[in-house]
Image (cartoon, rainbow, N blue to C red; front, side, top):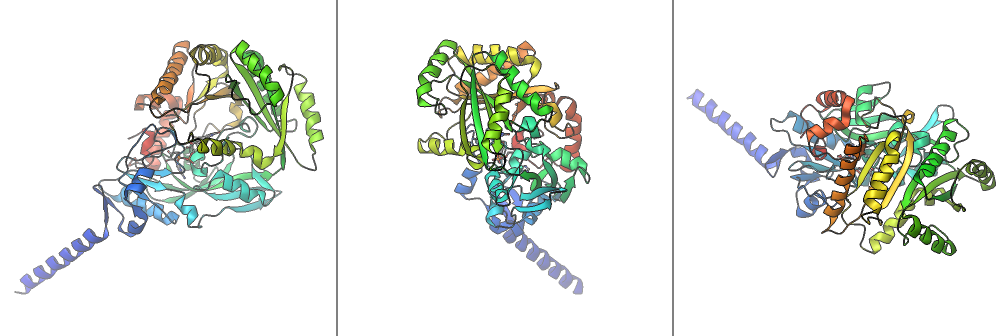
Length: 515
Ligand code: FAD
């Protein structure tokens, strides 16, 4: 009798636990999610739609749910629960989804809306350090670079390395590299980080730097979100200048243009005063895109475009303030530019530091008004070894873009030094000391992005046939073999680190490296 009673109470107890599990664990599209995150997990149509798309508007992948975290504990819980489950679900951190090929998506997994952390105010931007040991900002991985800029400028300080556009998250750009015209001088953004807090694929929070847990530190920087979610980055700061002399010079010949870019880069290599602070370049093929130039010069520039097809624009920016004065910068630039071979006229503007760094946002506002911002972006970004850049100009800029009349896209091209990158980090660059980045920043209609995508494929095929060993930046690859080829000699380390920090392959499935 007693045994029957015991059995009955055990059964009741088990049923009770089962009922609690049913009612308190969160089910979403057949995956079981942590019960204590119930009120932060959204499965409604709006949340799913927002997590299914990105700036590319090329790929759509539906997650089972989106998490709106309010603390890093939520991230630990989400990932830890998956790690300990017999059927783990995938997790993708999403910054602003400014990726273009679904990199921040997770089919039937969970997308973490990182910017929800800053709404909670728990992860503010905190400035520390001193003149002797260097200043830094502790910044949540979800923070936008524009907010980091505004917060640090209040203390007269600034990060040293940027992207062209600042409405990107710190975690998002550090997962790639973060490049712009400052890279030739300061290295990419990943080279300007002292320390990180990371929630790994096991749900553990680890603080890492070059000194402590260095393997994770190196893995995460440029690591495409594969090893952990960055919840805090300690960013290098320097005293900020307030103004910028922004110049552009035109060339009709790629060889002369690129030699001059490299000359300016070499000046800075010799350590002579960090002028120019920024060095980029772009193609000018569209006579309707001459806003930067004074109206009286536009007909002349337009007729040069007609004559030569492509003009090459060398762009620099040099920082100054009331103490350094722009006349001093002018003198230095005059000296530097004397040895260059640009067409007559230096086009220049004096703007504030913020206006310069935030320049793409001004374009964004214009494009948004015209309904041209939220359109497909079949982008291709490449790193090209210096030995192949001349052939690239002939084969791609001239024979593919110009000949086939693809002349309205923004195309960036500028050099960098390998010695400003840290090879221990996951980011992949060409083997040569000097390499160029070429960014084909196409915008298209919703029904014709494939035309641009095919052009990108043609560019890659050309490089392959011509033996130009390009590396994709912000790249997506169609198969694991292509990823292995992309990482080359770094693949084994990349794979070993994945097994160490995310052995169940939970993180960043949208990159399609391991999933
Ligand atoms: P997302 O696209 O949301 O995420 C990118 C990847 O990082 C995903 O795999 C995601 O899972 C992962 N991730 C996101 N947050 C974290 C985190 N906290 N921890 C770990 N992993 C995370 N890039 C440059 O280098 N230089 C440029 O000049 C530049 N200009 C740009 C201009 C525009 C207009 C746009 C749209 C993009 C530009 N980019 C540039 C590309 C940009 O660096 C990438 O889009 C990058 O992904 C950052 O965007 P995001 O913050 O929205 O990250």
